[in-house]
Length: 125
Image 1: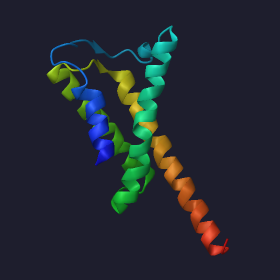
Image 2 (image 1 turned 120 degrees about the vertical axis):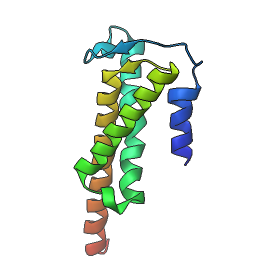
Image 3 (image 1 turned 90 degrees about the vertical axis):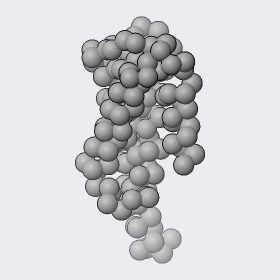
């Protein structure tokens, strides 16, 4: 619940309604030429890593990688559409891609930790 609250605060409620109206469908446009733009690009990846870890822990039905990543993709699309409708953020293709990558990284971390725990427990570490 805390993760969801922080995410919504970051992507929606930290900005004034009507303050952002642009749409960018150019892939990697937000990578930019400055440290600040690189940081924002990487921040979008990092923001979804906890989601990729938590979702398969909470819901057994989404433990396969493609289901988890698909849900991350759909949630990211939902955020971008909501930002566009409320004009609280730019609708950007890069955000959907980077959030989806973050979701995959989070799922991969969860999967690796699960395998390590299973191995450790079967060998009685």
